[in-house]
Image (cartoon, rainbow, N blue to C red; front, side):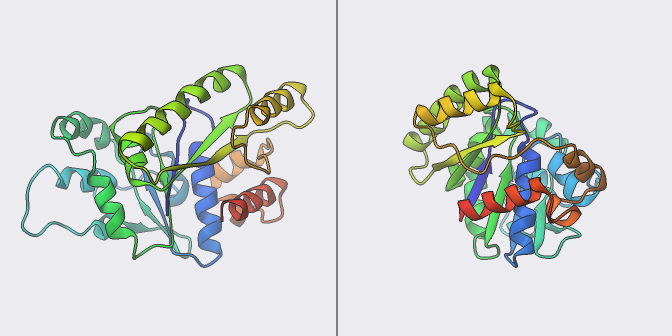
Length: 254
């Protein structure tokens, strides 16, 4: 069940949510894969402890292979690398993704990731896909190949207005390209329970019937330490309030 974490707005916690949910899946014994489609490579650095080596297999190499025909293509699984965490694997990002995008678009390779995901389905119990903060070729590819979409939301009016456009875009892709795609829910991130604005905004989303997930992920400076040490929260501080919220969110997603 590939799950895309997507928001067209940057800085809402996509990579943090992706990697921490994946780390929880892996810690529970599930064979887990993260695919990092964002050229910035934050998920890759988070899980590897630094930028991937230039000669390391990457998702860019997977896409690059689709631009030329081969009688013996490299299996998709060969572009996957292990992380330091048991059961957790990564298809790493690369700066080459930016360079490849216009070539892939002009050659109509939009369904190649879906084919790759189908090949990987037998190897992994959970697949999480981190996407760029834009509805570009890579994000569309992910949404066309996934069965679920998770939308991070930080509590401000700009994010709220962008949310409606995002939901409409996801529904359009579902109608035109991927009828199996479901919005699994909106993840409220960096939630400040004592502040009135976040509480009001979230309640308004609920009142509108939008699929807001619980629990909300609390705001915490501990997540910065998690990034700095390249340790997802379940490994850094298993009993921290943010870790417990992530565990409950993971359970709610099933």
